[in-house]
Image (cartoon, rainbow, N blue to C red):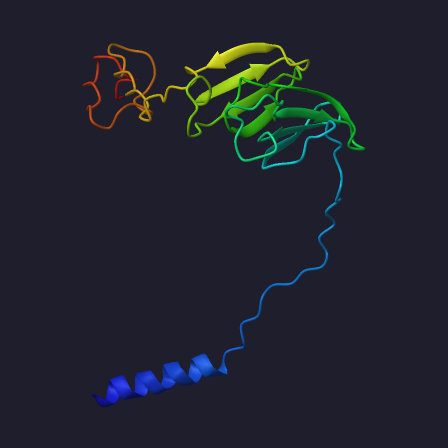
Length: 188
């Protein structure tokens, strides 16, 4: 071992030993606390895997819950639940329409959007995005329930030829058109 390597090794070991000890972060200023027992479910139903929570424009709370288990396949319970702020169940829906609720969002009109991921044994549900009215009416289904879509997005359309705008945002694979042939302003 050369003297340079040995000196470097000793310096590295010394500086590591002199560093402040590593400790876990501990911050007690978190204002959020769990509220156990919040959210009354219908008689005989238990909480399962809760995948998503969203606040509605009126302040009520939407919950996507996996039917008291970790799947809604072959279940007759509603996976989409609406609670008031105190945890009282206002309504629920979605039984038989959702395999594995994964995400939930509420748009500016109060419509509820649910992403339904695929789950083993799901043949007529899953692999969709579902749009419900605030009352639970199915308004739109994006995708084919039970069928996986193509995971690759379609290729972008080719850039337009013959005018309109500059070259920015166009494919780098195609060169810009020559001056005077469209695709932006001609040089001065």
